[in-house]
Image 1 (cartoon, rainbow, N blue to C red):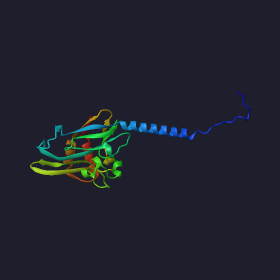
Image 2 (cartoon, rainbow, N blue to C red; image 1 turned 120 degrees about the vertical axis):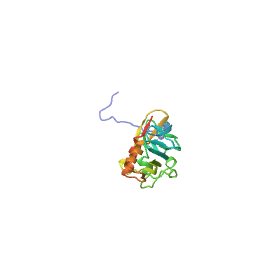
Image 3 (cartoon, rainbow, N blue to C red; image 1 turned 90 degrees about the vertical axis):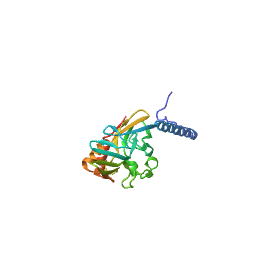
Image 4 (cartoon, rainbow, N blue to C red; image 1 turned 180 degrees about the vertical axis):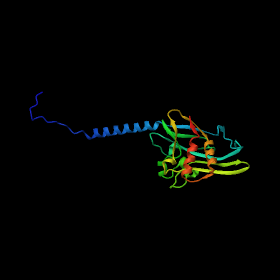
Length: 231
């Protein structure tokens, strides 16, 4: 084929409108399929809570002895939330406790598990489901959600002293949420919480009441965190 110098021109015909529409619709279809596949990885993880003190099962009726001290726990609740790729929403949070030790957590695997409520969820105000303020785990928009509640009384030398710890906040890096561990496979999650480190810290500090975010709340949160394990 001979092309004369200076006479060559590229002849491009316009693409018909119907073909553009077909390509756009097919692209949209692929996007929907992709998003559906991502969502399909979300699964219900059955979370089971076991509470102990110094390795012994928590006795909610008679209480637990350690040394010359008798401990009665009347209320224990805390939030867990799953984060996949650094992202989570209100559907990825559950409220576990003595009264409800088994819950189903919606999560995309693999995921990171945290104690407390994600700071982004705190910034966005109140939510529904497990994060509904009706559950009694929300302070105000300024202080956000309560990560954990631990209430009861302790008897030592015939003297009874009640304790009440409402741990939370989100304004500093030390306020939480707190990383617990990583979960890659499986649809069951065993959560074990030994409250002995938290009680020991509180008795040593002679702190019996924490009701707002701050330094004591952050320190108590670390003591609670040290007693949590998952498998």
